[in-house]
Amino acid sequence: MKRNYEKVKAYSASRNQKKLAIVFLTPWIIGFIAFNLYPIVTTFCYSFTKYNLFQAPQWVGLKNYFTLFTSHEFYLSLFNTLYYVIFGVGLQLILALATAILLNLNVKGKSIFRSIYFIPSLMPPVAASLLWVWLLNPKYGLINTFLRFLHLNEPLWLISAEWTKPAIILMSLWGIGSTMVIFLAGLGDIPHVYYEAVEIDGGGAWSKFKNVTWPMLSSITFFQLISGMIAGFNIFTQTYIISQAAADKSSLGGIKNSLLFFAVNIYQEGFSYLKFGYASALAWIMLLIILIFTLIIFKTSKKWVYYRGE
Picture 1: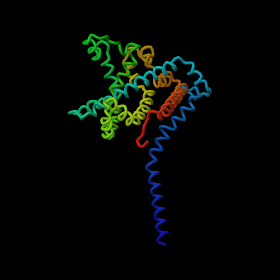
Picture 2: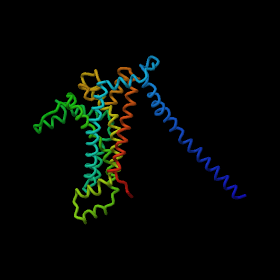
Picture 3: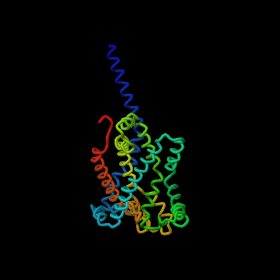
Picture 4: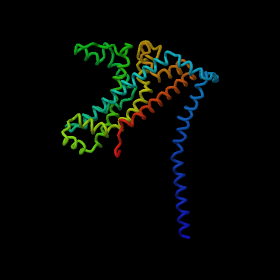
């Protein structure tokens, strides 16, 4: 009798826990359906229609997809985005890792230096973009003033099609603080005995980095690479601020569309030209491209990512 009572009591407690879990999960489920699942399904349906927001969508089949593959702006935005992802994200990872290694050294005032390098990443993207528009002003900006002092060439930065993408990459390096902090956490988790073992074998600084630091940080680098690549495909704020600050505001792509990134092209087609069906097709193609790159990185990760215990 007592055993049956305990079973009933345990069953009742389990049911109460499930009800409590459902109560806590319900706000997230509602938010996911309203702000993620519904827009995803809706854009997929709109991608097969001609829709300008003021009239009912008209079914056009695969026309939007055929049109974008013959569009010059599509390939230009893809090139600009890949340029930023390859060079911008790559430089961000290298610089964040190098900075984390330097800030992990036992030097006086280490905490102060860490705070100084992290603070810029707390600045909102819009404020940071406006600041860099002023810093990169070819005539009055601090960057060119410094280059002039060193008697070096002064790039035209944001008003030159050749220098706009390097300028955007330079702006992105301003916010490596969050990436650097994650690398610092990983460095602090590496047992010091590994470095002592390398020293006993006669290895130097490079040997320590190659045989200990890099393998132990490879899983963190893998995560940062995936996150940076996805963020790189979604770059938008900097271009929007720069195009609004420019004298010619006819295009969000900047000078000669040199800043027409994929997300910018989607926004421009949708909200400037009111071609929401076509913009939805672009969004789905961007999703597929990101998915392909993510799968490639996952496939290659077996050769360069190491986990403890392997």
